[in-house]
Amino acid sequence: MNPNLLARNDQGKPRTVCYEVVNAMLLNEFVKEHRKVEEQDVTITELKSMLAQKRKDFQALTSRVEEQASHIQKVSAQIEVSATAPRIAATSR
Image (tube, rainbow, N blue to C red):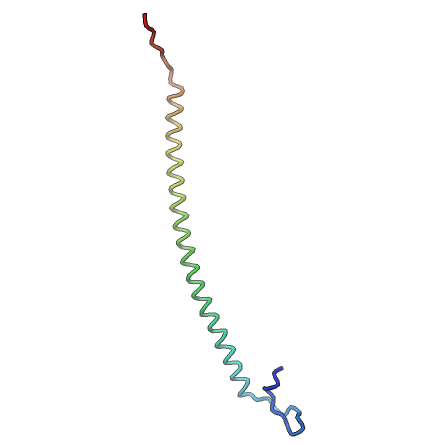
């Protein structure tokens, strides 16, 4: 309890609550929280933008890896064909 919120009588006992002070304190707290929310909104927007860019980067990387895998399969297939082809040695007489 904040002692500044109380109006006291001559004996120092609480007489009433100073509601005008309560309202000012509540407004101050509301403004602080509102600023935090606005800062968090900016941070969330920045994070969403970063996430979208990371997704694009990941998709591009995935496409490159798939393309490289396709090339590797083609080269592997060519190696298999050339490895299994019969070799005929020419004999000289």
